[in-house]
Image (cartoon, rainbow, N blue to C red; front, side):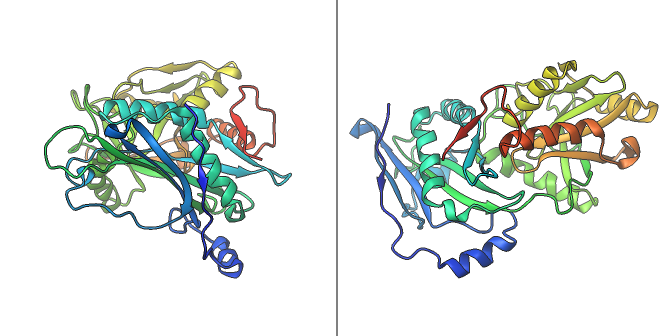
Length: 360
C-alpha cells in the first residue's frame, strides 16, 4: 500500500534566528521542529486515510479517547544524520517499520504498512531539513500511534492516529561517552513471558519509572532489570539493551523474548560477528556478572540504544553490594563498535549491509 501525503507547510515557521539559537544546545527531546506527519485510521472507512504533512499542533482528543483509558499506544525512535556532503541518512528505517507493525499486532492495533511509515518519516525530514544539527547532533524522529476512538468499553479501538514528530538533538555525551553507573532493581520487574516486554509501548516505560527513580536515589544513572520469574537473570536497562565482553574476545547479550529487540542491539551483533567475534545470546545471572567482574573474566559491559548508541557501564550497585568493571573505564570493544556504528550512520565509512537509506 502506498499513500500520497498532502504537504501543507506551516504558515508561521520558526524564524531562522530563533531556530539557530535553539540548535546551539538542543539537549534531548526538548526542542521540536515546525511540522509533523499524520495519517488516520478508521475501520468503518476501510482503513488508513488522509495522510498529511502539516504544522506541528495539539491534537483534539475526546476525554473518552481509548488511549487515555486503556493505553493502546506504541512508538518508535530513530534518527536522521547529516553527511559531510550535506545530504541526510536514515539508519535502518525498515527495521523500525517492521518492529512498529509487530508492536501494533501485540497491542491489537491497526497495522500501518511499512512503506507508509518510511514515507512519513522521510517527508518530515525533507520539510524540516533546516532543523538538522551539525557535528555529532542528529534529528531524532518519533513515530507513534494512539487509539482515538471515543468509547469506554474494553476492546481494541476502531480508530487510530499515526503521527511523526521530530526533535533536533545534540551529542548524547559531552566530551565523549562516559561510563555510566547502574542500579540493579530487585523490587520491580520490567516484563514477564507472554507480556509486552518485546513491544515498544508507553506502558513498559511507565512501569520502569519507579525503578529508575530508585536508581537515581542510589546515585546511579540507569536501572537494570532482572527476569520476572527467578529474579536472577539480567534482562535490560530502563530503555537500553545490554552486552558483556569477555577475556576471550567473545560477547554475550540476553536473549530475546521478554526484552525489546533493539535495532542497535541487532546491528552490534552483526558488526561483532563481521569482525570474527563470537556473540552469544544467552541468559546471564547477576551473580555470574559479579564473579566475572571480580575475576577479570569480564572485561567490559555496555548498554546500547538509538539515543546514546553505546554507553559503557563502569559501576553496578545493588542491595547485595557494588562492583566495578575494568576499573570503571570505557573499554576498547565498546568504543570500537560505537565508532564503527556512528561512522556508518553519518556515511563516513562503507555500509556493507545496506543499512543506510539516503533521504537526499
